[in-house]
Length: 311
Image (tube, rainbow, N blue to C red; front, side, top):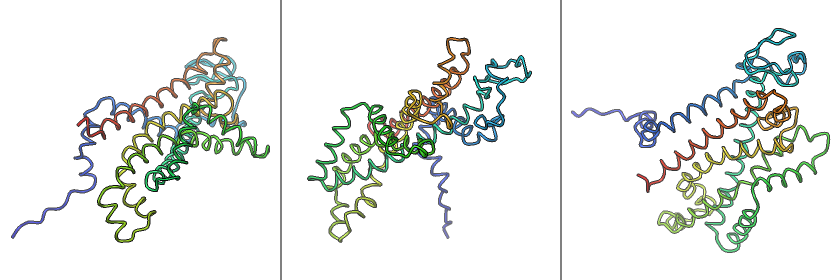
């Protein structure tokens, strides 16, 4: 009588996979993942980690303004880990809350661009003809302009048609729309190229023969086979989206002053850099650098790990 072996659990299969082995043997990937995870958790649990709510006017004390890091305030005697800004807000708390805005905008913009790019890429690659021509020519035209300028143009148009009384409330969503619409092209081009390869394979022909609708073939048969490069692009695009949000906010066309992101904090700190209050700019800039760099390095590692030519 033979013993029936218990199949390995999903967690065990994941731990034994080649991808996880490549991850744990790459020091750069491990350190980048640890830094990114630490920053993301700090942002998500900002209300629990931050010492104060820096965006609550009732909790601000202007007498705490321009307190250097790790030094007692001359008037109130309070001590702040990373100092305070011109309004007396704790810089450590403003970074945590500002990072929440930056991450929310970055993740939402990438998801929007990914969904839009996948849909257009599948349509262009599978249907071909005039559909392919129109979508790809639109992508080529957009690629002739820098993405940050496209985002600024879309942001300006969307904000212009938004009623004045709703502009501050809608600013974050307009920012997501602007960055997402400026970043869909690379998703669409990659998905289109992979779809052109997949649509000529036998499993697609078999699905056509049994009468499967085109939408079902694209979503249930072709999409799972083209999703790997899309995930790599999404990881790298997340870092670029965070930087794009910070750039727009630094230029004054991004997050509103009532919901400042890391870019807004850097813009505020830049005003006081040459008057000696260096910490107002330095710490938000270092946080943005660490967040974008760690996510970008993770994306580079994932691209190499999923590239069969490098195995």
